Image 1 (cartoon, rainbow, N blue to C red):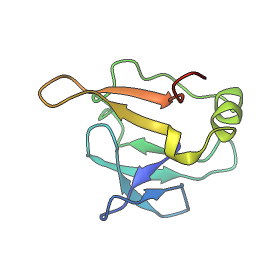
Image 2: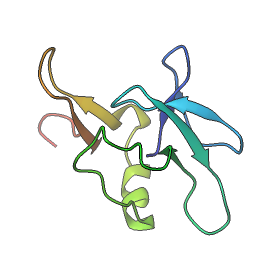
Image 3: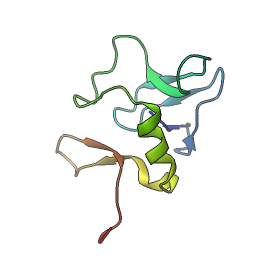
Image 4: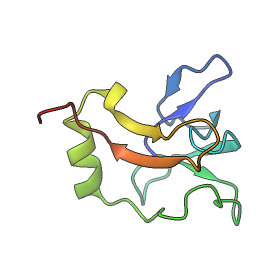
Length: 95
């Protein structure tokens, strides 16, 4: 994922050694900041049960997300009492 939350709900980008909270399930995530893959946030191994539609993100995926305002990326959608859905990038009405 591109963004995680800090303890105040502020969006965080990955940084070496950083920790955050998943915007979907609110469980802890860690920053993955190596040399082989795109920097990203990830759940602990075997703990990504919050998003059944999750799939690997590629550079193409990230390039498209980078074109959107950060407030429109990694948006959790839904309403109280319903299963929460995840949209990597939402769109403004009419766009």
